[in-house]
Image (cartoon, rainbow, N blue to C red):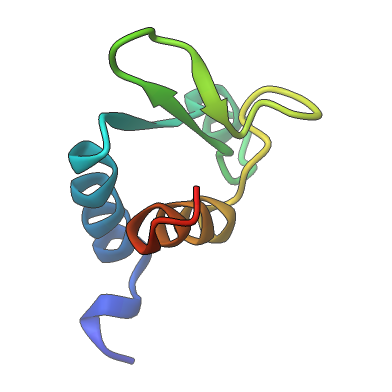
Length: 78
C-alpha cells in the first residue's frame, strides 16, 4: 500500500484541493467518540453554509464521497 492510499494522506490532499476552491472539510467528532467512523461535510468558507454532506443528515458523506465531489470540482464539473 502506498502512502497516498492512507486516509490521513488522502485527507491532507483533499483539504489542499478544497482550500483552493474556498471550501473546508468538516469531520464529525461526536461520531468518532462513540466508536463509529466520523462522517464528513464540505463548508463554503465565505458563507459558512454546508454545500455537500448534509443530506439526508448532517455529516453523512463518507471520505470517498468527499473525494469524488472534490475531483469533480477539479475537473470543472461542479
